[in-house]
Length: 382
Image (cartoon, rainbow, N blue to C red; front, side):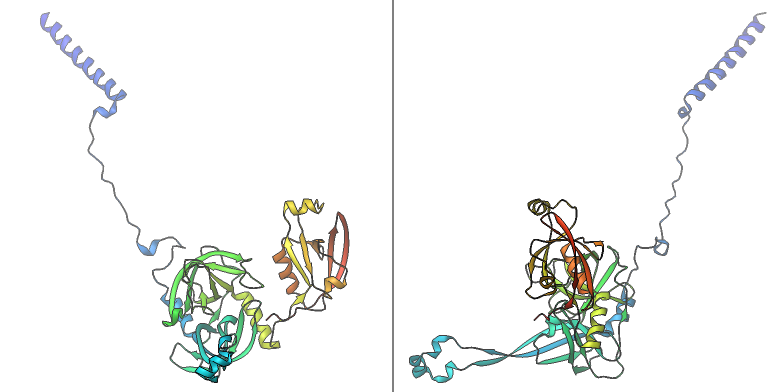
Protein backbone atom coordinates (compact mmCIF):
# COMPACT_ATOMS: atom_id res chain seq x y z
CA UNK A 1 0.00 0.00 0.00
CA UNK A 2 2.83 2.33 0.88
CA UNK A 3 4.54 1.70 -2.47
CA UNK A 4 1.35 2.48 -4.35
CA UNK A 5 0.82 5.60 -2.25
CA UNK A 6 4.34 6.92 -2.93
CA UNK A 7 4.09 6.05 -6.61
CA UNK A 8 0.79 7.94 -6.95
CA UNK A 9 2.20 10.89 -5.00
CA UNK A 10 5.30 11.11 -7.26
CA UNK A 11 3.24 10.87 -10.44
CA UNK A 12 0.81 13.51 -9.14
CA UNK A 13 3.72 15.80 -8.19
CA UNK A 14 5.27 15.43 -11.66
CA UNK A 15 1.98 16.16 -13.39
CA UNK A 16 1.40 19.16 -11.10
CA UNK A 17 4.91 20.47 -11.86
CA UNK A 18 4.43 20.06 -15.62
CA UNK A 19 1.08 21.81 -15.48
CA UNK A 20 2.58 24.66 -13.42
CA UNK A 21 5.53 25.00 -15.83
CA UNK A 22 3.17 25.03 -18.82
CA UNK A 23 1.05 27.72 -17.19
CA UNK A 24 4.15 29.85 -16.42
CA UNK A 25 5.40 29.56 -20.01
CA UNK A 26 1.99 30.46 -21.29
CA UNK A 27 1.84 33.60 -19.15
CA UNK A 28 5.53 34.62 -19.38
CA UNK A 29 7.06 33.19 -22.58
CA UNK A 30 10.18 35.43 -22.19
CA UNK A 31 11.33 33.11 -19.38
CA UNK A 32 12.83 30.95 -22.09
CA UNK A 33 15.93 32.69 -23.52
CA UNK A 34 16.16 32.65 -27.33
CA UNK A 35 19.33 33.04 -29.38
CA UNK A 36 19.60 36.58 -30.94
CA UNK A 37 18.40 36.87 -34.54
CA UNK A 38 20.85 38.04 -37.21
CA UNK A 39 19.84 41.42 -38.73
CA UNK A 40 20.64 41.76 -42.42
CA UNK A 41 21.49 45.32 -43.57
CA UNK A 42 21.19 45.77 -47.32
CA UNK A 43 22.89 48.86 -48.77
CA UNK A 44 21.28 50.55 -51.75
CA UNK A 45 23.57 50.60 -54.74
CA UNK A 46 23.96 53.97 -56.52
CA UNK A 47 22.13 52.76 -59.62
CA UNK A 48 19.05 51.86 -57.56
CA UNK A 49 18.62 55.37 -56.11
CA UNK A 50 15.18 56.89 -56.70
CA UNK A 51 14.65 59.20 -59.66
CA UNK A 52 15.41 62.84 -58.96
CA UNK A 53 18.47 62.30 -56.78
CA UNK A 54 20.72 63.54 -59.61
CA UNK A 55 23.65 62.01 -61.47
CA UNK A 56 27.21 62.01 -60.16
CA UNK A 57 28.35 64.31 -62.98
CA UNK A 58 26.98 67.04 -65.25
CA UNK A 59 29.92 66.81 -67.64
CA UNK A 60 27.68 65.71 -70.53
CA UNK A 61 25.42 68.76 -70.12
CA UNK A 62 28.43 71.07 -69.99
CA UNK A 63 29.98 69.41 -73.04
CA UNK A 64 26.78 70.07 -75.02
CA UNK A 65 26.48 73.76 -74.12
CA UNK A 66 30.05 74.94 -73.52
CA UNK A 67 31.19 75.29 -77.18
CA UNK A 68 28.40 77.84 -77.82
CA UNK A 69 29.33 80.12 -74.89
CA UNK A 70 31.75 82.90 -75.84
CA UNK A 71 33.85 85.50 -74.06
CA UNK A 72 33.19 89.13 -75.02
CA UNK A 73 35.86 91.85 -74.79
CA UNK A 74 34.90 95.46 -75.48
CA UNK A 75 36.89 98.65 -75.96
CA UNK A 76 35.57 102.18 -75.66
CA UNK A 77 37.34 105.50 -76.13
CA UNK A 78 36.39 107.75 -73.20
CA UNK A 79 36.94 111.51 -73.25
CA UNK A 80 37.78 113.07 -69.91
CA UNK A 81 37.60 116.79 -69.14
CA UNK A 82 40.41 118.42 -67.24
CA UNK A 83 39.61 120.14 -63.96
CA UNK A 84 38.42 123.76 -64.22
CA UNK A 85 41.48 125.01 -62.36
CA UNK A 86 43.62 124.21 -65.40
CA UNK A 87 41.60 126.75 -67.45
CA UNK A 88 43.07 129.51 -65.28
CA UNK A 89 45.50 131.65 -67.34
CA UNK A 90 48.02 131.68 -64.46
CA UNK A 91 48.05 127.85 -64.30
CA UNK A 92 48.42 127.72 -68.09
CA UNK A 93 51.33 130.22 -67.92
CA UNK A 94 53.30 128.04 -65.51
CA UNK A 95 52.25 124.55 -66.69
CA UNK A 96 51.33 125.09 -70.34
CA UNK A 97 48.04 125.31 -72.23
CA UNK A 98 47.94 121.59 -72.88
CA UNK A 99 46.67 121.06 -69.32
CA UNK A 100 43.28 122.51 -70.26
CA UNK A 101 42.81 120.19 -73.21
CA UNK A 102 40.55 117.15 -73.06
CA UNK A 103 42.20 113.80 -72.56
CA UNK A 104 41.12 110.50 -74.05
CA UNK A 105 41.69 107.07 -72.60
CA UNK A 106 40.79 103.53 -73.63
CA UNK A 107 38.28 101.75 -71.38
CA UNK A 108 37.96 97.97 -71.58
CA UNK A 109 35.41 95.58 -70.12
CA UNK A 110 34.47 91.93 -70.40
CA UNK A 111 31.41 89.72 -70.41
CA UNK A 112 29.95 86.60 -71.95
CA UNK A 113 27.52 85.65 -74.68
CA UNK A 114 25.73 82.67 -76.22
CA UNK A 115 25.74 81.64 -79.88
CA UNK A 116 22.08 81.08 -80.70
CA UNK A 117 22.34 80.01 -84.34
CA UNK A 118 24.93 78.87 -86.87
CA UNK A 119 24.22 82.16 -88.70
CA UNK A 120 26.41 83.79 -86.08
CA UNK A 121 23.79 85.48 -83.88
CA UNK A 122 24.96 85.95 -80.29
CA UNK A 123 22.70 86.83 -77.38
CA UNK A 124 24.18 88.84 -74.52
CA UNK A 125 23.35 91.64 -72.06
CA UNK A 126 23.02 95.19 -73.31
CA UNK A 127 25.18 96.51 -70.46
CA UNK A 128 28.05 94.29 -71.64
CA UNK A 129 28.39 96.06 -75.01
CA UNK A 130 26.66 99.42 -74.45
CA UNK A 131 28.68 102.28 -75.95
CA UNK A 132 31.51 100.01 -77.13
CA UNK A 133 33.59 101.09 -80.10
CA UNK A 134 35.02 97.63 -80.63
CA UNK A 135 33.65 94.19 -79.69
CA UNK A 136 35.88 91.12 -79.86
CA UNK A 137 34.53 87.59 -79.48
CA UNK A 138 36.65 84.69 -78.21
CA UNK A 139 35.14 81.28 -79.00
CA UNK A 140 35.61 78.18 -76.85
CA UNK A 141 37.73 76.64 -79.64
CA UNK A 142 40.19 79.54 -79.47
CA UNK A 143 39.08 81.51 -82.53
CA UNK A 144 38.67 85.29 -82.23
CA UNK A 145 36.55 87.57 -84.41
CA UNK A 146 35.08 91.07 -84.41
CA UNK A 147 31.32 91.35 -83.81
CA UNK A 148 28.74 93.85 -85.01
CA UNK A 149 25.64 94.95 -83.08
CA UNK A 150 22.35 93.87 -84.67
CA UNK A 151 20.22 95.68 -82.09
CA UNK A 152 19.63 96.21 -78.38
CA UNK A 153 16.76 96.44 -75.93
CA UNK A 154 17.76 98.39 -72.79
CA UNK A 155 14.35 97.73 -71.20
CA UNK A 156 15.21 94.03 -70.79
CA UNK A 157 19.01 94.50 -70.92
CA UNK A 158 19.41 92.27 -73.98
CA UNK A 159 21.47 92.73 -77.14
CA UNK A 160 22.01 90.68 -80.28
CA UNK A 161 25.45 90.56 -81.93
CA UNK A 162 26.55 88.83 -85.12
CA UNK A 163 29.84 87.30 -86.20
CA UNK A 164 30.94 85.89 -89.54
CA UNK A 165 32.70 82.52 -89.17
CA UNK A 166 32.29 79.03 -90.59
CA UNK A 167 31.42 75.90 -88.61
CA UNK A 168 29.91 77.76 -85.69
CA UNK A 169 28.42 75.80 -82.78
CA UNK A 170 25.01 76.80 -81.44
CA UNK A 171 23.29 76.09 -78.15
CA UNK A 172 20.10 74.03 -77.75
CA UNK A 173 17.19 76.26 -76.69
CA UNK A 174 15.30 74.90 -73.70
CA UNK A 175 11.97 75.81 -72.10
CA UNK A 176 11.94 78.23 -69.16
CA UNK A 177 8.17 78.26 -68.52
CA UNK A 178 8.26 74.66 -67.28
CA UNK A 179 11.08 75.26 -64.79
CA UNK A 180 10.41 74.33 -61.17
CA UNK A 181 12.03 75.62 -58.01
CA UNK A 182 14.71 73.07 -57.14
CA UNK A 183 15.66 72.22 -60.74
CA UNK A 184 19.42 71.99 -61.31
CA UNK A 185 21.08 74.96 -63.05
CA UNK A 186 24.60 75.47 -64.37
CA UNK A 187 26.02 78.91 -65.18
CA UNK A 188 28.69 79.16 -67.88
CA UNK A 189 30.64 82.35 -68.46
CA UNK A 190 33.90 84.26 -68.04
CA UNK A 191 33.94 85.54 -64.43
CA UNK A 192 36.63 88.15 -63.71
CA UNK A 193 38.21 87.30 -67.06
CA UNK A 194 39.80 84.10 -65.75
CA UNK A 195 38.39 82.06 -68.65
CA UNK A 196 35.34 79.93 -69.27
CA UNK A 197 33.97 78.66 -65.96
CA UNK A 198 31.04 76.46 -64.91
CA UNK A 199 29.20 76.82 -61.59
CA UNK A 200 26.37 74.69 -60.19
CA UNK A 201 23.15 75.55 -58.35
CA UNK A 202 19.39 75.25 -58.46
CA UNK A 203 16.42 77.39 -59.42
CA UNK A 204 15.87 79.34 -56.20
CA UNK A 205 12.76 81.24 -57.35
CA UNK A 206 10.85 82.24 -60.49
CA UNK A 207 9.25 85.46 -61.66
CA UNK A 208 11.40 87.82 -59.59
CA UNK A 209 10.57 91.46 -60.34
CA UNK A 210 10.54 94.94 -58.82
CA UNK A 211 14.30 94.70 -58.29
CA UNK A 212 15.04 97.97 -60.06
CA UNK A 213 17.41 96.29 -62.53
CA UNK A 214 15.38 96.54 -65.75
CA UNK A 215 12.16 98.19 -66.88
CA UNK A 216 10.66 94.75 -67.61
CA UNK A 217 11.66 92.08 -65.09
CA UNK A 218 10.74 88.41 -64.89
CA UNK A 219 13.94 86.86 -63.55
CA UNK A 220 14.95 83.32 -62.73
CA UNK A 221 16.74 83.43 -59.37
CA UNK A 222 19.55 80.92 -58.92
CA UNK A 223 22.28 80.20 -56.39
CA UNK A 224 24.71 79.10 -59.12
CA UNK A 225 27.66 81.46 -58.62
CA UNK A 226 27.40 84.47 -60.97
CA UNK A 227 30.21 87.04 -60.84
CA UNK A 228 31.31 90.07 -62.86
CA UNK A 229 32.15 88.77 -66.33
CA UNK A 230 29.37 86.16 -66.21
CA UNK A 231 26.88 88.71 -67.56
CA UNK A 232 25.40 87.56 -70.87
CA UNK A 233 26.50 83.96 -70.33
CA UNK A 234 24.38 80.83 -70.39
CA UNK A 235 22.23 79.39 -67.64
CA UNK A 236 21.56 75.78 -68.65
CA UNK A 237 19.65 72.83 -67.24
CA UNK A 238 20.98 69.34 -66.48
CA UNK A 239 20.53 68.37 -70.13
CA UNK A 240 22.68 71.16 -71.59
CA UNK A 241 19.72 73.26 -72.80
CA UNK A 242 19.69 77.05 -72.51
CA UNK A 243 17.10 78.22 -69.96
CA UNK A 244 18.31 81.76 -69.24
CA UNK A 245 20.81 84.57 -69.86
CA UNK A 246 22.80 85.42 -66.73
CA UNK A 247 22.29 89.11 -66.00
CA UNK A 248 22.86 90.34 -62.46
CA UNK A 249 23.91 89.49 -58.94
CA UNK A 250 22.57 90.70 -55.62
CA UNK A 251 25.69 91.51 -53.64
CA UNK A 252 27.13 94.07 -51.24
CA UNK A 253 30.70 92.94 -51.87
CA UNK A 254 30.55 92.74 -55.67
CA UNK A 255 31.03 88.96 -55.62
CA UNK A 256 28.59 86.08 -55.63
CA UNK A 257 26.52 85.62 -52.48
CA UNK A 258 24.21 82.91 -53.77
CA UNK A 259 21.62 85.26 -55.27
CA UNK A 260 21.90 85.64 -59.03
CA UNK A 261 19.34 86.54 -61.69
CA UNK A 262 18.90 85.34 -65.26
CA UNK A 263 16.50 86.43 -67.99
CA UNK A 264 14.25 83.46 -68.94
CA UNK A 265 15.04 82.07 -72.37
CA UNK A 266 11.39 82.31 -73.49
CA UNK A 267 11.49 86.09 -72.97
CA UNK A 268 14.98 86.40 -74.48
CA UNK A 269 13.92 84.39 -77.53
CA UNK A 270 11.03 86.76 -78.27
CA UNK A 271 13.22 89.84 -77.80
CA UNK A 272 15.92 88.37 -80.06
CA UNK A 273 13.42 87.58 -82.80
CA UNK A 274 12.08 91.15 -82.81
CA UNK A 275 15.57 92.64 -82.85
CA UNK A 276 16.65 90.47 -85.80
CA UNK A 277 13.45 91.16 -87.76
CA UNK A 278 12.91 94.84 -86.92
CA UNK A 279 16.20 96.07 -85.46
CA UNK A 280 14.46 96.92 -82.19
CA UNK A 281 11.65 95.74 -79.92
CA UNK A 282 8.16 97.11 -80.63
CA UNK A 283 5.95 97.45 -77.55
CA UNK A 284 2.53 98.87 -76.85
CA UNK A 285 2.36 101.84 -74.46
CA UNK A 286 -0.45 103.22 -72.36
CA UNK A 287 1.45 106.26 -71.10
CA UNK A 288 0.93 105.91 -67.35
CA UNK A 289 2.91 105.36 -64.18
CA UNK A 290 1.21 102.74 -62.02
CA UNK A 291 1.59 101.46 -58.48
CA UNK A 292 0.05 98.68 -56.44
CA UNK A 293 -2.96 99.49 -54.35
CA UNK A 294 -2.69 98.78 -50.60
CA UNK A 295 -5.46 98.91 -48.00
CA UNK A 296 -4.55 102.37 -46.69
CA UNK A 297 -4.38 103.86 -50.17
CA UNK A 298 -7.69 102.26 -51.17
CA UNK A 299 -9.38 103.66 -48.06
CA UNK A 300 -8.14 107.20 -48.77
CA UNK A 301 -9.57 106.97 -52.31
CA UNK A 302 -12.92 105.53 -51.14
CA UNK A 303 -12.20 102.36 -53.10
CA UNK A 304 -14.06 99.30 -51.80
CA UNK A 305 -12.87 96.72 -54.34
CA UNK A 306 -10.41 93.93 -53.62
CA UNK A 307 -8.10 94.43 -56.61
CA UNK A 308 -6.87 97.31 -58.74
CA UNK A 309 -3.89 99.37 -59.90
CA UNK A 310 -3.52 103.06 -59.09
CA UNK A 311 -2.55 105.50 -61.84
CA UNK A 312 0.08 107.59 -60.06
CA UNK A 313 1.18 109.59 -63.11
CA UNK A 314 0.12 110.43 -66.66
CA UNK A 315 2.47 111.19 -69.57
CA UNK A 316 1.34 114.33 -71.37
CA UNK A 317 -0.21 113.66 -74.80
CA UNK A 318 0.11 109.92 -74.23
CA UNK A 319 -2.77 107.49 -74.92
CA UNK A 320 -4.11 107.61 -71.34
CA UNK A 321 -3.94 111.42 -71.24
CA UNK A 322 -5.76 111.77 -74.56
CA UNK A 323 -8.45 109.32 -73.34
CA UNK A 324 -9.16 111.50 -70.31
CA UNK A 325 -7.60 109.38 -67.57
CA UNK A 326 -6.26 111.16 -64.50
CA UNK A 327 -3.79 110.50 -61.67
CA UNK A 328 -5.72 108.87 -58.85
CA UNK A 329 -7.85 106.74 -61.16
CA UNK A 330 -7.89 103.02 -60.37
CA UNK A 331 -7.77 100.41 -63.14
CA UNK A 332 -9.70 97.31 -62.10
CA UNK A 333 -10.03 95.46 -65.43
CA UNK A 334 -8.33 95.36 -68.82
CA UNK A 335 -10.44 93.78 -71.58
CA UNK A 336 -12.79 92.44 -68.87
CA UNK A 337 -9.94 90.67 -67.05
CA UNK A 338 -9.17 91.71 -63.47
CA UNK A 339 -5.73 93.25 -62.97
CA UNK A 340 -3.46 91.81 -60.28
CA UNK A 341 -0.61 94.28 -59.79
CA UNK A 342 1.12 97.21 -61.45
CA UNK A 343 4.05 95.20 -62.82
CA UNK A 344 1.85 92.65 -64.58
CA UNK A 345 -0.39 95.41 -65.92
CA UNK A 346 2.54 97.25 -67.52
CA UNK A 347 3.98 94.01 -68.92
CA UNK A 348 0.58 93.01 -70.33
CA UNK A 349 0.29 96.29 -72.23
CA UNK A 350 3.86 96.07 -73.52
CA UNK A 351 3.15 92.71 -75.16
CA UNK A 352 0.37 94.23 -77.29
CA UNK A 353 1.12 95.78 -80.65
CA UNK A 354 0.92 99.56 -81.11
CA UNK A 355 -2.48 100.49 -82.52
CA UNK A 356 -4.29 97.92 -80.36
CA UNK A 357 -7.38 99.28 -78.60
CA UNK A 358 -7.96 98.08 -75.05
CA UNK A 359 -11.03 98.39 -72.81
CA UNK A 360 -10.29 99.77 -69.32
CA UNK A 361 -12.65 99.66 -66.36
CA UNK A 362 -11.88 102.64 -64.13
CA UNK A 363 -12.96 103.70 -60.64
CA UNK A 364 -12.65 107.43 -59.86
CA UNK A 365 -13.63 108.59 -56.38
CA UNK A 366 -16.07 105.73 -56.00
CA UNK A 367 -17.62 106.06 -59.48
CA UNK A 368 -17.04 103.30 -62.02
CA UNK A 369 -16.85 103.83 -65.79
CA UNK A 370 -15.14 102.37 -68.86
CA UNK A 371 -12.72 103.86 -71.37
CA UNK A 372 -11.32 102.65 -74.67
CA UNK A 373 -7.65 103.51 -75.14
CA UNK A 374 -5.58 103.03 -78.28
CA UNK A 375 -1.99 102.05 -77.49
CA UNK A 376 0.95 103.62 -79.29
CA UNK A 377 4.56 102.47 -79.65
CA UNK A 378 6.55 102.69 -76.45
CA UNK A 379 9.24 105.40 -76.70
CA UNK A 380 12.79 104.06 -76.85
CA UNK A 381 14.54 104.18 -73.50
CA UNK A 382 18.16 105.32 -73.38
